[in-house]
Amino acid sequence: MTVQAWFSSNDIDVTPGETAVIALTVSNLGSSTESFVLSPAGLAAGWTTIRPAYVTLFGGSEETVDVEVRPPRLPSTTAGPNALGIRIVPHSDPDAVEMSETTLHITPTYDRTINMLQPALRSRRRAVYELMLENQGNTQASCRLHLIDPSRRLDGDFDPPAVGVEPGGSTLVRLKIKAVRRQWERRSRSIPFRIEADQQGTPTVTGQASFVQAPVIPERIGWRLLLVVLLIGALGGAWLGLVRPEIRRAADKAVAQRVVPVVISSVPAVTIPAVTVPGQAVVVTVAASTTTVVAAPDRPASEPVGEPIAIPLPTGAAVGEKDTQVYTVPGDRNLDVTDILIQNTFGDDGVVALRIGDKLLQWSLASFDGIDVNQRFVTPLRLSPGQTITLDVTCAQVGQQGASTCSPNVLISGRLVPLAVSATPDG
Image 1 (tube, rainbow, N blue to C red):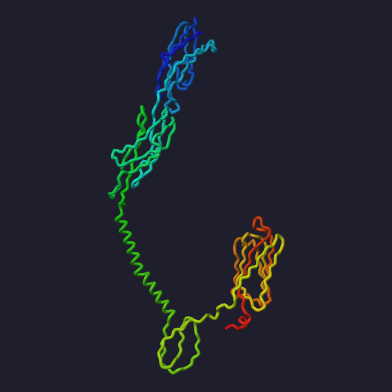
Image 2: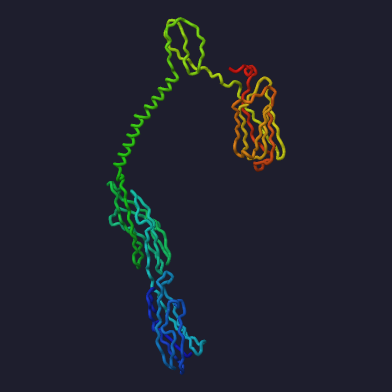
C-alpha cells in the first residue's frame, strides 16, 4: 500500500439544498513522488465534488483536499444515512486502489402545501370543498386536518380526517362544511376560514378558503314578486279583454248558424212542394197563424250504402316461386273496392301483382321496404257477382332471417252493395 486517506469526521450531517465541505487527508506512504486521482463512489457520488481531484505528493508527504457534498432538495433525496466513498488511484499502479469512506446523514425536509380546489363556494347552509395535500419533502407526511374558524359560524368534517403522503406524492381530501346558523338578513355573508395540517415535530401547513352564505330570503325577492304580479295582471287583462270576448262571439256565431228562426205570416193555406237542404230552414205556408219553424238537416244523399268488408289475402311464396290468392264476389251482391293496403314488414324482395276485375296493379316489394303502401280510389272499383280479385306474389329474396318464404300482407277494403240498391239510379 503506497497511499492512505482519511476524513476529518466519520459522521456528517448534510441538509438537502445546502453544501457541506469535508476535509480529506491523502498521504503518500512511498519513498518516491506519486500522482493520485480522486473520485467519489457510493450512493452520494452524484452530489459530491472533490477539489482538487488530482494531487501529486512527494514520498512521505500528505495533502488535504476539500470534498463538497450538495444533495438536491428533492423528494427523491431520502432522509437518513448515506455512504460516501473516495477512491484514490495511484498513477503508476492503477490496480492499487485505496478507498476512504464516511457516513452522510441527510436531514429531513418538510415541504408540504394545501391547494384548495374551490377557494370559495356559495350556499345557504352546506357545501363540499376539495383540497389536495402535497408532500415535496423527503420524509412521509402523516398529518391530521383541522378546520379553524375564528367566528365559530362553521362546522366541518374531513374525509379522511388524517392522511399519510409519501415523498413526492399528493392525496385528495373532502371537507363537508355546515353553517351553524342560517342567514336571515337579506344579504350574503362571507365567512373566511383556514385548514391546518399538522404533524408532531414538523411545521404546520395552512390553506385559506371562504364560505359565502346566501340568505334564506333571496335578496331581490321584492322585485321578483312585483314582476310576477304584473305578469299575472297582464295575462288576466288579455283574457278578459281579448280572449274571452272572442270566444263568446265565436260561440254566438256558431249558434246563429245552426238555429235560424223563420216567421211565417198569416196567408191562405197553399200546398207547396218543399226542397230540404241540410242545415237550412224550411218555409211552409199554413193558415191563420204566425209560427217559427226550424228544419232538421236530412241525411246526405251521398252517404255510402252497403256493408263494409275487409278482405285479407295472406301470402307465402318461396324464393323463385309464385303464390296466388283468389277472392270471388258473392252471387247476390256487388263489391265496391275503395282501399288497398300492402305491408312489407320484413323487407322481402319481389313483385306483387293484383288483378281487380279487368284492372291490373303491380308493385315492387323492394321499393317500399318497411313502408306501408295505401292505394285509395276516389271512385270505387265496381265488381259484379262472380267476378274475382287475384293476388300473385313472386318472391325474389326473403328479408326475415330464418324465414323460408316472402310474406307481404295485403288487405282490400270496400263495401258489399245489395243488387237492389246498386241498381237504383243516382240522383
